[in-house]
Amino acid sequence: MPGREPRAFDYAWLKGQAHHLAGQPWQAPSQNLPPPVAALDWDQYQAIRFRPDHTLWRDEERHLQLRFFHLGLFYREPVRLYEVADGRARELAYDPGMFDYGRSGLDGGALPADLGFAGFRLHFHTDPERDVAAFLGASYFRAVGQEMQYGLSARGLAVDCGLPRAEEFPRFTAFWFERPAKNADRLVVYALLDSPSITGAYRFEIHPAAVLTMEVDAALYPRKAIERLGIAPLTSMYQTGENDRRMANDWRPEIHDSDGLALHTGSGEWIWRPLANPAQLRFNAYQDASPRGFGLLQRDRDFANYQDDGVFYERRPDLWVEPRGDWGRGAVQLVEIPTPDETLDNIVAFWNPAEPVVPGKELLYAYRLHWGSRTPAQPPLARVVATRSGIGGIIGQPRRYFSWRFAVDFAGGELPRIASDVKVEAVIEASSGKLEITSARPLAAVSGYRAMFDLRPAEGSTAPVNLRLHLTAGGRRISETWLYQWTPPEAAEQRRALQAEG
Image (cartoon, rainbow, N blue to C red; front, side, top):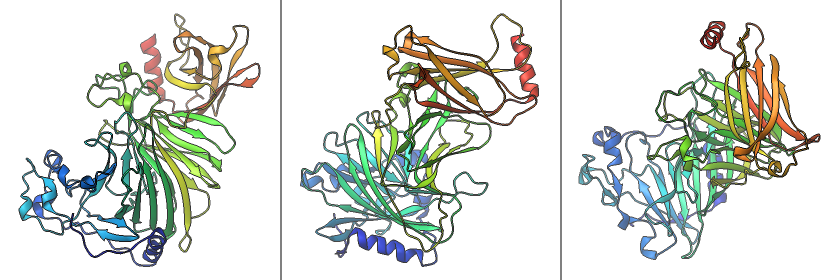
């Protein structure tokens, strides 16, 4: 693959470059695409294929190989790509001959020689035709574990996500790939990040495996004060599921890439927060110090609950963030955005440091990303395996007022081994309203327990209610903590629900 004159490169140089860039006025990226490329629609763009015989390192029979994405559709700003060997970086030149344009309508011979690339994907020798990681668009990237099924995404950084103004999307403007040894099982990638508010230098060490891992080091340099900085942001989709049927207008029972946010706090508490598709944007912050991990997970792995034999939601990977070093004080923040269907990602989770982000500082973060179905997000305690809700009250008896029923199923931990004479109790808290008909009883179907309760909201209130629940046995905590936020419906809707049950 032809290249340009090599120059010295290492991570220290890249950090210096990012630091220098932060002191300069931001330059908007060029979107000056040739008109035929700019006009590509979805089907036309998908018709463009990278030619396997142009795969980087293919002729060297290395375990790790790279293919590149063409510009077009949503990907309008070129990124620069470099190969690093013996401490020197050589730019990888775009060549229309790398691509099969199929039915895209593009004539490769008419495209400019310096058009550039949109991103890249990583292939591993165990399945050379299917990629295991891809970096494409702004600072987005994805990866897969042994299931070989893409799902949620990560980002390099989030800026002002969930605020009542336009979010800023930093972008990776260049990547450097260290040429791996022939039998190497991991790839080192460097990236330069830029945006109006901040620059950054990143180092990724990517290790494909049953659970793919990425060791990430980030050095960040703010150009200006940032109100809400998101470290290690994760982006997913939740349309409908067993706990939230607001948009259950599809023939499939559940549609989501992730069904919950998991937290392992600095104090050692394990928390499970089911996701939802709210009627209005919803923002929650979970304060912590020195977090041990957080992630967006797909706990429900049963095909019967999705019935989708095209995109296989039950195979979607979990993504777990494991901080390396002490991240100090801050909060894991969760943004849930209304979505009408599965084509729009509407869930974002990230770490927000408590310390103000101001120009002139160097912010250093290191963490490990785990992609797959068996990440370290496995609490030793009983864990939540289902959350369901519906109208409250006692079946067969008139309902004199509106209440809402919650049923939370726990499995694992010591639940399968608990003797029948041991009292298991549900410890439940609500920020407002009244708790009624509380119980915890064995559930043989999951070899666990089901906690149930009704919540009667405060009269006339439609303010969100925060709920907290865990199980105890003999006074000992035996489960992770279930957190939930529920918004009571308007009074007219409450009356309709009672009349329908009437």
